[in-house]
Image (cartoon, rainbow, N blue to C red):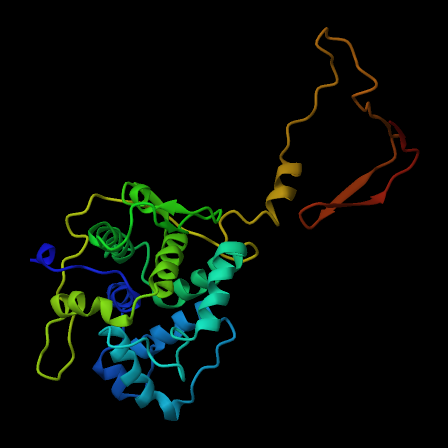
Length: 303
């Protein structure tokens, strides 16, 4: 049935699929006791707003009823959320975001990482992240209003990828992929209503009640392996080199003092000679790299 509808990727359809990958929300008991998980639809859309405008001002709690209504309109592709609480219809904000993605990709990628870290469920048995990527790839593939040559900024190095190549991908960086698809979705020139037909298919009307997602996007799309971005300096960065360099020095193989012919090479190798008398010598090591010599007599070192 989905193939009989003109599927469209836009801000509202991207957001709808993204919501399916959120972290688990609190149940009624926790909400009744006053606990907040920060994962409501308005809060999630406000999180995306900060990807676009990092210093976007968050609305006061007293405004959240209005924000909720604007969020619903955005999700249902009725409009772009208004300009009071969301920046998606603010041309200056979108232009600045577009400039960061094209010219300061690392900054934009870190912003998307921060959003993902707060809102999206990754690396667990539910595989929500993998399902989201496959759903978005299928949507891009099915959206015949997107030219095959259209560029998407889904690479960690900031280099764009054509649609025709994107839909063939077998491995992507999760955060970079989200950034590139989100960037395209909100910078489209068409009105938000371009996605209404898609939303009406995915989220059928319930006569005024909440419209749950019932689509099946990505379910039959081939598997796509995921890598994950970590900003440099983040304590969870698996490749952080702050201690690695020290470890490499400590554990390094000793340099041979022989040339290829088996003779000492005095220009390349340092030769150590240590002469110690019979008086007791005590060495005490403190910490991981420091050596404190407490008592040495007649120590000679030749380099």
